[in-house]
Image (cartoon, rainbow, N blue to C red):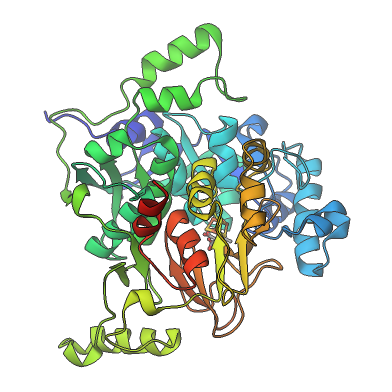
Length: 477
Ligand SMILES: CC(C)[C@H](C(=O)O)[C@@H](O)C(=O)O
Ligand code: SF4
């Protein structure tokens, strides 16, 4: 019998019941909750007179609707100016209190984007099944967990039963071999993978990221990769457990200690695909060939290396593909044949669950240090992924670097990743953004998003147009 993939192992370890129709019941170890997708789930429990099945499996944190301005945050929930946002955050507080669920509230230093908070707190551990009413739950797979987003009715189901009805996915190995060049980050790899396989490339699959590049990648880089799995069409992405994983998890508030830690490590050591495991599909990329990536269109697969030029619809034979490119160029206000380096962002956003961890902020600060944001850039926001990331960055003096460069240093939250709080992109404006989605209106009605790495966003802020960050890094080295 062939060996098992990491996904097979995680699946089998949590299988409660396999049904004849192909569906299965799996056990959920960790349920993360935020304010957007939980209100109806709690309401459902209330109407049915049910209680959560296992209280300590749940952890809640508000992130999407929280304001990121320090003044507005000073007033706590009551100080949120937007009424819908205030109600949303207040409702999460009320529900957590009523159902006895642990919540990290708005002005707790541990508050932040749920996908930053989970791993940071050790609430996400290797070998777990982790779900949340949020598509970027795939992030947590970086720890060797089976993690994916669920819908609101499933949130209610998990609260009530601690189980979920699922179909097993197929196995896709995305292997990035070789070594990344200097200045190339996990975000560039993630975008290059999507450029290669497309936004539907991972549909029906659970992705495992492997190869030398991933083995050498930090945990935060692995999270960035897994975060973007959903943009490649897969609901989940994961990375095998190794020493890097264990070093990351050790000592975190929710991580096991003493003899429990040793027992856990012994079990976690098996969380990798067996040497003879068979994948349904394997995609290989050469890490050394990956350049800094910039999306130009309205889907993450509309991506080019920094030295690329925009496609010309006239040269595209397939009518559907031609129309998609035409429509994207029109929405984005860009011309065929234009160089990526001629695109000038009006705003810059460094943040989101893709790229708001300490290494992301360090990478951006490194580029910005001693430089000024270009006069043509109206606003450059730096939004740490959690209060703890913020405190760490401040201890390292990164906030001072950003502020000296003319950037805004904010409180943690989803911020300008999506227009659900006060941070929005104006109609027609271009944004160099470290987030994960560039759909029409994603960052604000009519807004035009270009997805990039933190270093590339910082470089665009300084230059006033997209530029190969490596040219700036060379001059500082
Ligand atoms: C609000 C939430 C349901 C949504 C998601 O599921 O991803 C959001 O986080 C996003 O990034 O679009
Ligand atoms: S940061 Fe963006 S992608 Fe991540 S959970 Fe928030 S809105 Fe979704």
